Length: 391
Image (cartoon, rainbow, N blue to C red; front, side):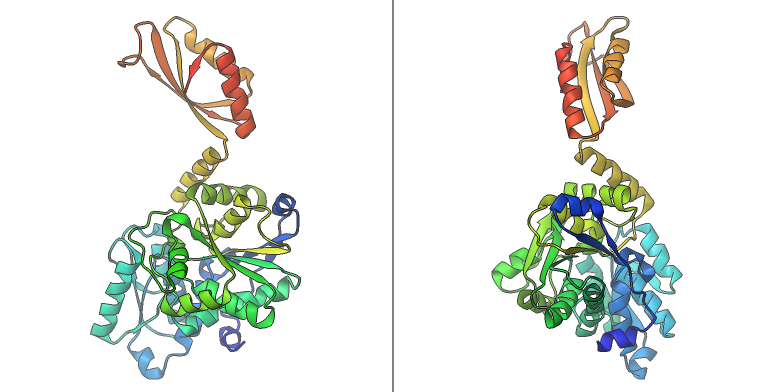
């Protein structure tokens, strides 16, 4: 409650939107907590402002420093600029361009360092020691956790009959804050963290009873790509969170695509994690359920790639290698047969020279758009019925 008073009108109370398509899928009410519509495009503004607002005048005079792949960076930059404080942000190499530009736009100096967030965090700590700047940790501080927890209070107010809350999870700041806030008022509500399986540090750490760093990570969900839980957040998640589940890259892509198509919500891959968990296990979560869309800061080029990946994972893109006779009209006949299935041809390529082909064969690589997996299976069956060799 104290953190909420500190925030005042510096953050917005983001809407909760009911989702008919998800509700129909899981057999009960599902709502989306649209934190992608927050100032700076993610929940990070909450924790960053609470943390920075509580600095002493002497600390403020030395400025602040942070490490972030983008969302925390923007939250820190906006909060610091609002409070008249200098800010420096270290980002991993390859951080999304829109996040970098937005961070600079909010007034921070940006320095790229290292491949992973942990590398940038080490550089930020060194900068703090050299300059006296105060390190604003992206998740592992009680003020940051308290700020993120205000989202949990909003969920309870906006959806008072909620039974399950699903939260995208990286280092655990949002999950810890939401769980502490919700369990204090409604211990009966189930709180579930969702991690990208290619960057899931919590399951192994919880099993070991202490934070355990991952040896490597590889996920499109940069917003939750954190290799080690924080000490503070680990303890809070261990004590207050009911379960942590993981989702694949394919599930993230499908969820992101579904949110664009069905909910008209643009999110980053990390922001789609909670919905991905619902799609993976429609009967696994008691309803009414709330899925947190934690952020919407996505590079348009990445959005395009993820949408195409999501279409493919959903069976709506079909990539085929078809062997046809090297005769006049052979390609036209193939395309006619494809058109009769109702599939849309997106791309065609020929291969005539290959050690796997006979003198009288041509390999055609064809990319099709279908209406989904059942339709894709119908296309394959039809082509094989017509005598084509299809891979």
